[in-house]
Image (cartoon, one colour):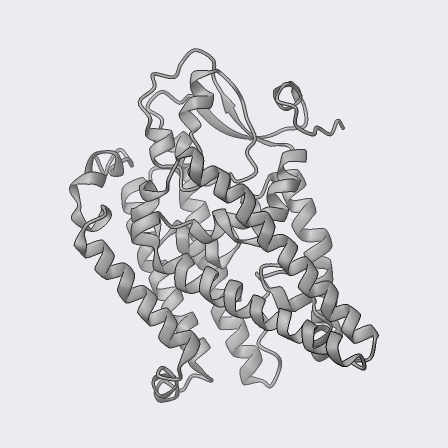
Length: 360
């Protein structure tokens, strides 16, 4: 099965560490514990210093990269016959090693801010706040603004959210690699979809309000006492609840139990913005009519919990805001029913579904 690149179809439920067993719950508890220690204690600082790293966050970046490399090799062993996946995983690892580890380390070494070029607001929520923009050199501040308002939305408009969520983003890259063995644990239930639609936009509103309050406080010269305190408190709550608990402790900690995209699917404000733009763009999953045999592989291996089979059974080409374009549904389909497309023409599939379309 490894030669066919679809080993997961046969071995997934035979491996105890890939099902909800005591092993996976123990592994999840271990990951959660390590994240809590990382975020809320200094227990890793001595280790970082012993390795001549600037602080615990560079140690975290190093371990993060190692897990991605190992997870990428595991993924390619099972699915490496796909050219799309070979390139995608290679780009994931390269961006993490270069932009997520080496470049920030080099910048810090030479006395510059350790800036992460692969992260944009609102995922890196402080990169568009006045305190950060004032601190950064002008070229990095300009890059932060251009990235948030031009690179991100136009990339999603032309290529779908997959250009970022499945190729560039470090959170998505860890899910693609280290988290891949548990992609089938993602729920496809209607209840999980309803929760997703509320939670992800709630977090988006939260960061919009927090950012607006920080700018209001800055323009007011930090002179309005109660507003200044409220703005700072809002930023702190967002950083603690979303930036630490939801994205790290829960978002990564529950990989073995609930799948690798809990953060991306339910809480990431960047994913929310990209998803909205994707619905108006040219990305879609095309379905070849009258070829689906209802095997369910596509839905089983969708890391975003989309019931792809339901669309295939109805011969319906579709665009879902949550889809990250990982391509696994097309990869595991035994009849080649599904195809990831970027095209401006033939928008009737969106129009018939009542979705926003843009004609060029």
